[in-house]
Structure formats: C-alpha cells, structure tokens
Length: 120
Length: 261
Image (cartoon, rainbow over all chains, first blue to last red; front, side):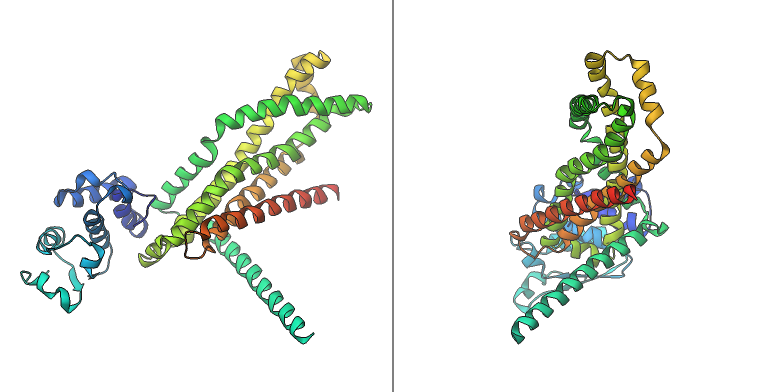
C-alpha cells in the first residue's frame, strides 16, 4: 500500500498505469468496487486512517484490477491479527470477484477457520 | 604495505563502481524522460502535483525574498560600480550578476532546501516501508511513475522560478536606483534593455535546466540507496544534501569557466 495515496488512488493506480485510463474513470471504478462491500467511506482515507481489515480489502480490490487470472492470499490471519472468522471475507470476495481464481495459502493450524468455505 | 595497497585498490574499485551506478541511473532516467510510454495518466498526475508543490507552493516566500534581495543586492552592485567609476557599465553588470549568476543559483538553493529534502525523505521512506517493492510487484516502472515526474518538475520549477526571480529582482532594483540615483523608470528600463542579450537568457535557461535536474536526481538516488531501517532515512537525506550542494557549486563553477572561455 502506498502511504502517500488514499485508498481509491491506490486501487486506481493499477489501471491508470497498465490500461492508461483517465484518473477520474479509474477512481470511479475503485469507488464502485469499495461500494459493493460497503467500504465507500474509506475511499478518501489514507493507510494510517484505516483498519487492517479495510486495508486487506483494498489490497484484494487492487489485485483484482490486475490482468493476472489468479490471486494468492498468503496467511490472512497473520495480515489481520484481529481476524477470527474468514466467512465474512469469503462472502465479500465472492461479491467482488466473479472471474478470477483466488488461492489462499495458510498453515494447517488455521484449517478450522476455513471449514465453512467450499470454494472461493 | 601490501595490505595498504590492497585496501586502497579495493576502495578505488568500490568508489568507481558507485560512480558508475549513479551515472547509469542518471542515463536511464534521461532516456525515460524522452520515451512516450513513460507518460501515462498516473505519471501525469504525479507530475502536476510535483510542479504544484515545488513551484507554486514556494511563490509567497520566493516573491518576498526576490524583492528584498533585488533592492539590496542591486543597490550594493550599483554603489560598487559607482565607486569604481563604472557607471557606464552598470546595466551589463546588473544583468550579468542577476540573470546569469544570482537568480538561477539562488533559486536552486531555495528549491534544494525545500523540495529536494522532501523528495529524498519521501523516496527513502518508500524504500524502508517496502512501498517501492509493492510498485515493482505490480509491474509499475519506478522511473516512469516516481522519478521522471520529479525530475521534470525540478527542471520546470527551477527554470521558471529563475526567470521570475530575475524579473522581480531587476524590477525591484528600480526602487534603489530611484532613491539613490534619482533615475526615472524609462532610463532604468533602457539601461537594462540595452545591456541584456540573448546569451544571458540562454545561460539562465541552461543553468535552470542543469540545476533543476540535479536538485531532483541526487535526492532520488540518495533516497534509493537508504538501508532498510528508519534510522537510515536521516543519513540518506544528509548524504543526499551534501552531494547536491557540491554538485550545485560544481555546475556554477563550470558555467563560469565556460562563459569565460
């Protein structure tokens, strides 16, 4: 996450650079994605003003903006130390993503956290 | 004795490697400035922001200083010229001093103190926070996105502010000549217009571009060389500023040498 950009700018940056689309259009798309999971209020906030879970979602949206067909999430329970249940995250990811494959890499010790998830 | 020679050789090789790496980085940045693919929406936004922070934000203090320096320094120059019976050369002395030397050098010093330190710190913080790695992971070219906008803003800002500084300094010099010499505005204007040459403007622009380039490339490179620790940030800024100030003086001396040939 770039600390001198707000959340919508962090997301929009990928498309501005790789697709060369205008800033307004890229930011509009970023806000639409944040709105889908009710995080539109963090669009203008910077990293230090957001919770870890919000930053995590922004990182996922930013990854979804890339051309890559597969997204790897490594140890989400380490990234968000207050996380106890992955179900909400899985639900929000399924709202955000319809086409890309998402692979979560985690240790066996966290296996129980994923028991309600069939496929993400 | 052999150990001493080995150490000396080792240090020489390392220094040459470091200089070559810096030259290589500079050449790469210059090439990217001329590549059309460097200019995308994100880069242009960074460029606009940088020009705003570097050139627009400094204007109030810049105008105040140019008026104060214009009145005082032109006053001193005229007094000295009068003392040494050089009244007929006052125009060319003022123009050479203000346009060729003082305006670009003073502007570069102000921009160095205000913007170069900020750029050096910003890049070093990004390096320590691994933000540069994030950009690389997303295949965002650091030179295109981070460095080229800052270098262009440095060149544009120092050149344009040098011109502004020179104009305001010359205009405010009238205050002194009016009270000290009783010279009217028309005579002062003609004195300057008869003295100024295309060469003076070319020198100002050339120096503005050279100063602008180094006021950004050196802090950027210094920031990139910061170690992965927060304590490395002030050291990086310190090293960057020392190198920058030496470079500014070297450019100033080189330009004087070139002009004297």
